[in-house]
Amino acid sequence: ASAYLRASGVDDVRQLDGGIHRFLETFPDGGGVWRGRNFLFDAREADAYAEGGHDAVGACGDCGRRWGAHLGRNVCSVCKTLCLACPE
Image (cartoon, rainbow, N blue to C red):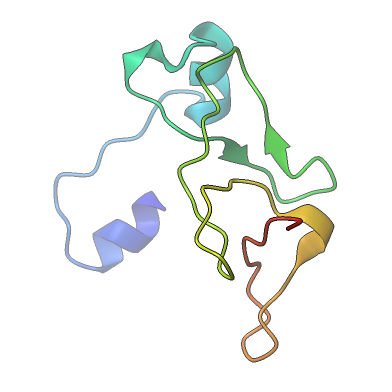
């Protein structure tokens, strides 16, 4: 993400030493600044941390309900991007 931001012209880009994964291991409650879940690009899908550190910040693309899991690896039929879709 930092390389993308720099390439897009953003000069003041900062990066966590050890990444978000290490930050959330150190501060399981999100340290008062983290909301949501840490998406992982493998079968685990996302890291879940201490209660309050993994509140859904996304919404179901069909009904708009707050949702934060990529259940069943739902993808857009046009661009093949992962989509949030609740089980309802």
